Image 1 (cartoon, rainbow over the protein chains, first blue to last red):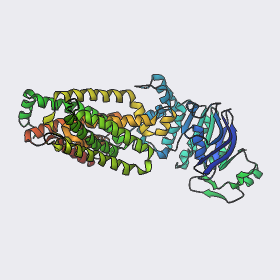
Image 2: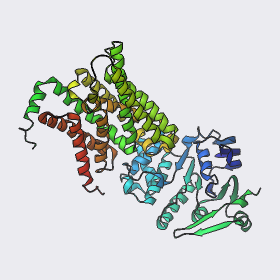
Image 3: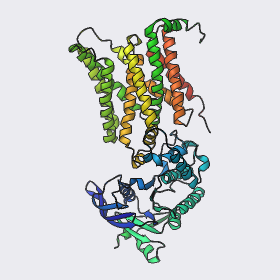
Image 4: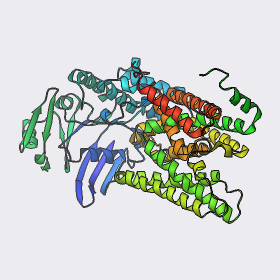
Amino acid sequence: MIVDCRHLSFGYGESLVLEDVNFTIHRGDSLCVIGPNGGGKSTLVRLILGLIEPGRGSLKILGQSPRKAQRAMGYVPQAMRFDAQFPISALDIVLMGRLDRLTVGRFSRQCREAAHAALDEVGMADLANRPFSDLSGGERQRVMIARALACEPELLLLDEPTANIDLSIEAQLIETLIKLRHKMTILMVTHDLDLVSSIGDSILCVNHRVHRHSLPLSGETIKEIYSSRRRLEHDRRSRHIEGDHSACNHE
Amino acid sequence: MSSPLFFADFIDAVKTVPLIRYVLFAGIVSSLTFGIVGSLVVTRQIAYIAAAIAHSILGGIGASVYYSRLYDLPWLTPMIGAMIAGVLSVGLIGWVTLRFKEREDTIIGAIWAFGMATGLLFLHYSPGKAVNLESFIFGNILLTSRSDVVATFALGLLVLTLVTLFYHKLVAVSFDEEFASLRGVSSKAYYFLLLGLTAISVVLMVRLAGIILAQALIILPAATASRFSRKLWVIMLIAVGITLICNTGGLAFSYQLDVPTGPFIVLMAVSIYTASLFVRRKRQ
């Protein structure tokens, strides 16, 4: 079992962001985390990564506390978050995935080879020495995925990998992720229905409480999830799911 | 303008006057540390924090003058006082910026002012002959001693060693704190290391340029350099080169024209930076 979450609650101050959360992730699973903004998606990811501690309940990653399991996880934050002018090459960013193997000085040859291999995996081998600032949004996102792959993770966590990315590039990105899906366990926060249908084998609805559904969803379940205050938005790039998922509070 | 004849007096002085040699040597060594640390500071966008550390160092300088005169402690030189204040100020400012992110600028402003105010009061109440405040704020190369040069060399070596050893971690923490900490790199520890390196660099330049001008000299060459490269180590090299030109050029010009050295060095740095703004950014 990769993730085992039992009766987990977390809140800032008095108000609970997540309440009595129970779910498990098995090796090879490919989960998409969906839910409204402010519903606790990123809080859940941060809990799994061990960046914050659960208030109540237990959360085990590979049988260990999240903090101890950090080395076994690869994390892909949103590429838009970064200082685009930062003077750094794609390869140097990917090498950050090997920081836990570096004490002082330069990265070993093995680390550099692993970084090149990770860039190759996402189809960026030719752009290794390009400055970060010269890369397109999609290329930056793929560098971030390569960095997570360089960690040689058992669990790959992605935070909205297709946000702010052109439709044409998104198709390439989905292709990359489909390839990875057979190699490792994936947990991905996304609003992107294309991504959910092509990568996910189940979805995790996160809205204060958490519910897991297997894909493809039966018509019944879809109705349950989106029956109340449903909103399917079409924008120029892709279909996005929005809504409060209040119907997810079924038992 | 740059004919050898113009600098004839300066070259003579380097050959014959030990003091000028000391200053020149200190200037060359500190170019290395300034270029390197400055590039890290500019990349991390903490120029304001570097400035605060530089100013609050005056408190330590004042205290060292006061106590060394009051209790007759000759070892307590302004350099030592500046180092101690630097350590305290790095600890305090580092802690404040990590703890109170939203009130950061106000609190840093307060520490900045507190350091300068206590420094001024200590200097005012120091027994004995009046202290020349300007020499600390704007630098006075005439006060450079052999021991300053030794200290400059030792601290410069320390900075170079630390940056060489921890280069990748310093860069990683600047780019993405969260990810670095997930890979077991303590982002806080390396943040403090960077602030510490900044403080050391400022102390190195107190004699040559003074605390106020020193912090400008950390930022400007690195800011200039970052307009011409997208590789941090190249930016560092360019920044070292620019600082070297400013330090030696500024020293030579100011000697030749008989004007204060610190302001001249900084004016050169400002001019080079301003000129760089008119050069089109390099595109790959």
